[in-house]
Image 1 (tube, helix red, strand yellow):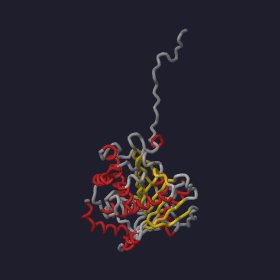
Image 2 (cartoon, one colour):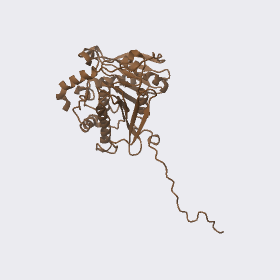
Image 3 (cartoon, one colour):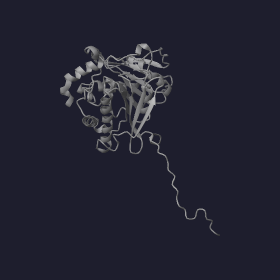
Image 4 (tube, one colour):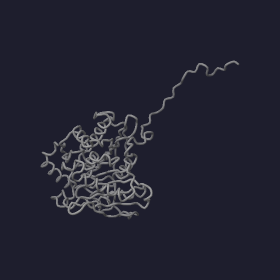
Length: 372
């Protein structure tokens, strides 16, 4: 692939991205304990084994299949830190889904300086099914599906930063596993040098083609949400935009063999919101021609390289920005509408409503009584 020759540039960009010193948002209080069960497990053996955490809400009933939400952390972060910072467990308790937090193996802890604990998303081995970190995350997902009663139609994937890049990879390598994906401050498939203002080694068109090729016989439409700040100094809005465009183009290749249709690359609906006392944000939505939602782009105005919303506890302030709307709510609200075998969503609810115009029809006999 074209990025293989850019390993040196990628390494420098990764070090810069991971070393980004963002100003933490104001923090006020500790979070209440999670009411459900938090358990630690290991996938694999030896130095290449991956630890992971599973949160099971009190609402889980082993006789009824539950959705699974997989949350992949970023650089210099552990699964535990991601779990505590994102507040996804509180949402899982209310909505009744299980959460998996995958972690890197011990060799990632030996990576130099700021790249410690980074998923190896620049490594082409991890861009392919059965290889590298992509295989490890998929393996952990399948392990949880074996230990809990999981609805296989409702397995979802989300990732932050390096985890966001991995999410783009897994959407292409394992479209038969994940029903829909959500990316926070991450980039497109194989475009791992799109960092710190660098344009990346691939265009959206090239990345989409490679992702489609990776899908192979498993190709299917994968709904995608991309969110992040317009002040992100590590993964620029342009890189995040490319991640969304790549997803849309790949979906079009699945549907019609063309990258630009039938799903328009231009949003059909644009809405705006404001978190009280925090940032404003814009949401752009993309639809099938029939009116089903298929993709969204959340752009949070003023936010740097953080998970949106999340905990206000001071010990997690390096990873979250509570002034932003909840990334957990945004991600779950999007992905949870989809099933793996039916990515059309709830069309009637999704379709933008247009004002109905009543037409007057001429009825020649209306207003006149016929004689008997």
